[in-house]
Length: 163
Image 1 (cartoon, rainbow, N blue to C red):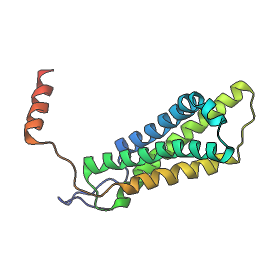
Image 2: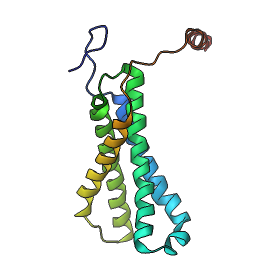
Image 3: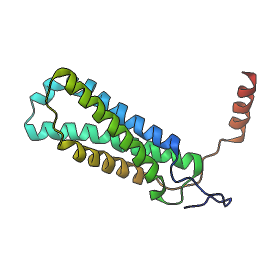
Image 4: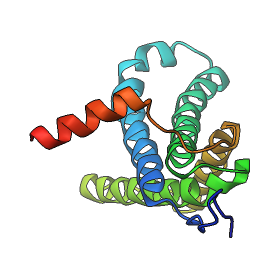
């Protein structure tokens, strides 16, 4: 377990960071697969199969990389990190739950439409999600928790009292 500068133990899993990473991975992947790819299908069909596969791979990979970066930055901003790997458990847990949600939706959609499902591909896809999110989280530099400028902090406190 790691400790913050004041000696208090840091949580291994930062739940808000995990939730954020999982939601970004899930919703981002759904957006790419349900909106972006159908919208670009005419362009993709005009490309060769390897190039079209590469474009799809690039779009879906970018979503999970971004989810890893944002989840790790959320944890660093809230409690600080001393090592790059400190945010990994939170990010990986969130993205794993996002992947499970995505696969559950895919199974429900396939069942509702009577299509066959490639069950053997699902675990490989899960490993891909985790690897991409881990790379994204690893990009984020460790650092102290972020604090607000004192003037901004006074404004936020005043705004909260007026409600």
